[in-house]
Amino acid sequence: MSRRRSPLLGVTAAELQVLEALFGDGYPDDWRTIATVLFISLRAPAELSGLADARRAQLALQMTDALRAEIGGTQPYLSKGVRFDLSLRDRQILDEFNGRNHDALARKYDLTPRQIYSILDEQLRLERARRQGTLPLDPPDEGDDQVEA
Image 1 (cartoon, helix red, strand yellow):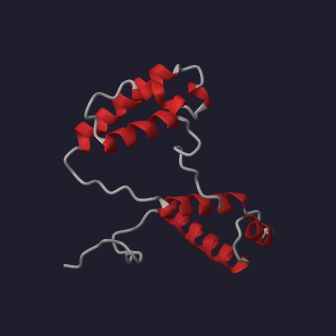
Image 2 (tube, rainbow, N blue to C red):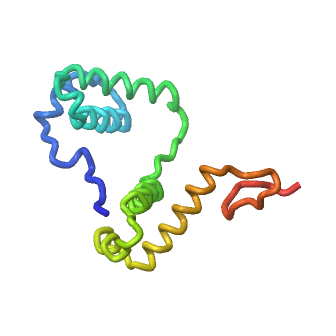
Image 3 (tube, rainbow, N blue to C red):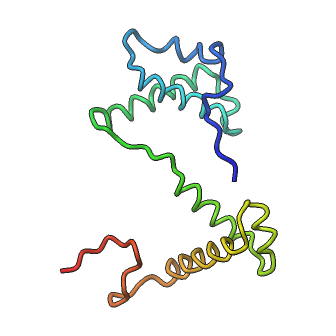
C-alpha cells in the first residue's frame, strides 16, 4: 500500500498567495499550517473544480476558525492514521477476495499469503460481529474497554 503524499509537497508560493493575503498580522503559525492544508485539500476534489481559489481560501480560513473555536486552548492529538489506513486496506482485501486469489492479493499488497489469511479471518470475524451484534452474556472481545465489577 502506498503512503499518502503530504498535500504541502509540490505547492508553490504563488499558488498560496491568495490564502496568504487573508492572513492578518500575527496569525499563529499552527493555524496558518492548518489553513494551508485545508486550502490545498479543497483543490483536490473534482466536484470543487469550479470553485475559485479565492473562495477556497475563504473556506479554509472559515474551517480553521471553526477548529480554533472548538478545540482552541486544548492540545488535541492527531494520529497519523496508520491503524485506520490498515483497516481500509484490510477491508479492501476482503472486498477483492474471491476464494481463490490469496496469492494474487499477497503480491498486490506486498504481504505474505499467511498475512492475507490472517487479515481475511479478522475481517470476516468483524463482519460477523457487525451483522449479528452481541448478546449480554457474550464474552468481551480482546481489547474491549469493559471494567469488571
